[in-house]
Length: 351
Ligand code: SP5
Ligand code: ZN
Image 1 (cartoon, helix red, strand yellow):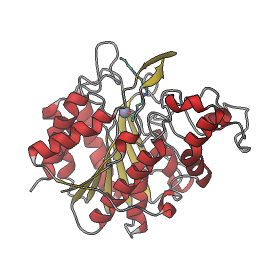
Image 2 (cartoon, protein in one colour; image 1 turned 90 degrees about the horizontal axis):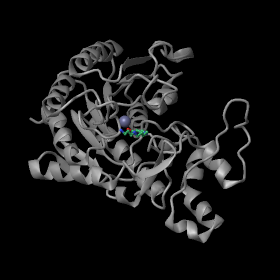
Image 3 (cartoon, protein in one colour; image 1 turned 120 degrees about the horizontal axis):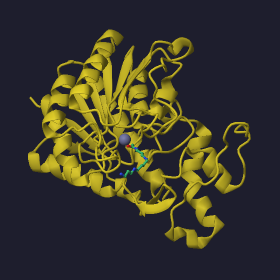
């Protein structure tokens, strides 16, 4: 099993994030990916590889050129405001909400930061662009080897991707890796690609990128957005629009739902995956469905209460679909358990 890992991931390392108006230690840390790399090595699972660089043209089929340019130059602009900013992280603080214009991109850096983001919980750091761009390489490389005949390949990258839309970052995500993988598979000739997103949080960015397309189906199981991040997307009535009508399936579950409810939703998702007739599957694998995840935790319950045996079962169910699969790492913040849980999912594909 080929596992393309982002060797530049730790260049993106935020110290803090804003949560409920306070600076708190960042949840999305380099330790997350390192823990998984270590577990894969310790268990002898997979072949850890660094990817070739993917074409910019692939990225611009997923993201807007002006957004990519902004991300690439953002840190230099931030430093230009004040050299002392080099020791800080950049947080958006103003957004073009309803009635405000987004068609004119402002010159003011703070205004641009809001124009291209969705929340204040996702700091930009000196290495954000390099790390996120390299993550796209991992996703594209995994897609290419699956197209070439591998039953499975993995993109092990951070920061994660599924909240990032065509022209915005948020939810710790900057470049949408799952969308890059799906687009790469389409470009190589897969007639239909289906994305299954099992991160605890709805993959609003991925949904939005493909919402009006009939060549990529998006299916997501996640915490009900009425109470869970990202709050403003992920409801069951979102079924796609225009040509994409019928190619989007959301399965929101109430916070506090446990493994039995989650696996019922997974069955529904698998029915929809089979019905989609896809040539390839992209799995947005967030591990924040874990029973001890700190980010999805509230009122004494975290994720969907999944633990190692459930992650192993998830892997078995997905592998049994017998569809060429690209697995993309998304969220999951209990660093000490991520390695084991990731390995549990992937073990099902080991021959
Ligand atoms: C990729 C991904 O999983 N992004 C998640 C972004 C969530 N951002 C909101 C963070 C909320 C932190 N909640 C702390 C709960 C303390 N019990
Ligand atoms: Zn998540």
